[in-house]
Every structure is written in C-alpha cells, then in structure tokens.
Image (cartoon, rainbow, N blue to C red; front, side, top):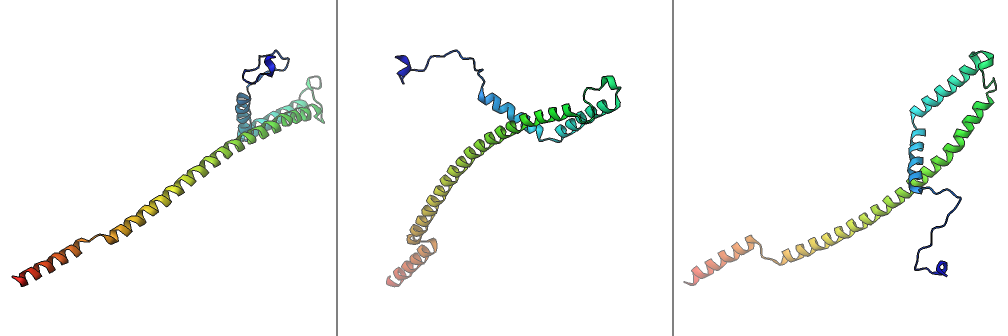
Length: 155
C-alpha cells in the first residue's frame, strides 16, 4: 500500500478544511499587531466610538440603531478584542522564534570570536617567547664592537 511507504510523498487529498499559508498569515498578524500598538489606532478607535455614541445620542430617534446602554457597541468592541488578542499573541510567538534564532547565532559568533581571541593570544605569547631568544640590534652592535676591539688589540 502506497500510504505505508515512507520513501514516497503522500498523495494530495481533497479536504473541506480550508488551506492557508501559515507564513503569510503570520506576517499579516504581525502587521495587524503592529498597527494595534500605534497611536493612530487609538485615535481611529476613539473617533469611531465618539461618532457611534454621538450618532446614537444626538440623531433623531428613528435613525438611532444602538440606544443608550450601547449594547451593540460593546459587542463590536468585544469582537475586536477577541480577534486582536490571538493576533497579538501569534505575533509575539513569531518574534520570540526570531529572537531565539538571533540569540543562537549571536552565541555561535561569540564562541568563534572567543576561540579566535584565544588562538591569537597563544600566537602572541609564542612570538614573545621566540623574540626573547632572538638577538636584538643593540646586542648585535655591542657584540660587533667588542669583536672589533678584540681584533684591534690582537693585531
């Protein structure tokens, strides 16, 4: 049976469940969450509520669609909040995932930098040790001068 084979992809089946791209939905939720956290959104929401209340208080009685306790306005705001909360949580989860990847990359980079620094430190220490064994210019001059003096005394 083909469904039992792991080396072959499954056949596409028709489903009544709608298919959506999780990445596109995630990006959309981040854009919405970003907008919900702005002063512009607060101004728009305040204007919307003020117009709603003004209309239902100041307009003629036959044009009012949501009288004083403003039950329909409360329902609309609750509906907006019930959609906003999961979208904000989804956006936060995606940000957490990005932060986790960034943290891991930073940690690996830091480890590589630390290893490079330790290597260079060992190399510098090795060079200092070998430089201690090399003859310096002043030492060579003094030895040549002493050799010239000994030679002049011998002749």
